[in-house]
Image 1 (cartoon, rainbow, N blue to C red):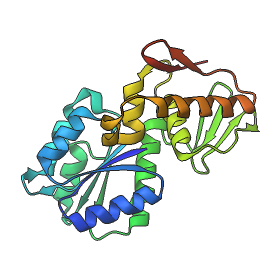
Image 2 (image 1 turned 60 degrees about the vertical axis):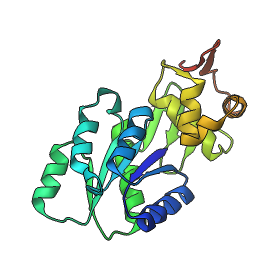
Image 3 (image 1 turned 180 degrees about the vertical axis):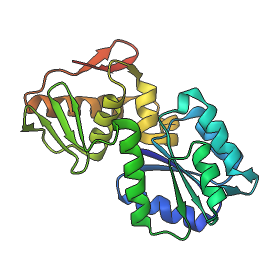
Image 4 (image 1 turned 135 degrees about the horizontal axis):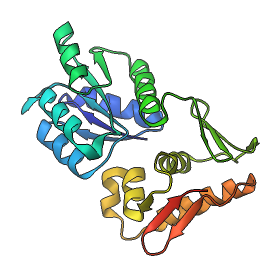
Length: 227
């Protein structure tokens, strides 16, 4: 799962980045409204952490822009702010934020809220996600096929599976998969061998549990996930 941290305090941003990375998230950072706007324009995120007081303008204006963008409807948004007034909370929610967390906050609480927002946004709040004969427990990250447990998935393999499940029957390009799994670092790849390897390992592990072939290659483009 990919997180964008929009926070002008380098120390706080780095602390959040370190904690969430250790928790298994892929994080990117932006320190101004314009830098964040450019990242959101070119990349997609599962959750955006937004400070509303930024050096080049209000984060609420950026929040409004995000909410009005039709291709960003799956991004959960959590405002992280030192402002604790009722008006600020109401304005943030009205403009499209999913949650509002007042500084200072415990990083473990932030992690729980991120998980809740992503689960609510992508999987209608369900702890158990089902597709065909696949069943995924999003709390334990356990994957079952016809009640047979799929061998342990790496973090990248699990993220890849959940990304496929969030867009069933949609053709996902190799570039899209690389950007989802590696963020900005995907731009430096000379080829997509790492994507081929992740997909191959995921398919093999699903097959070990007796799974049907859910992942279909689309020649010259990428992959599609469907029964």
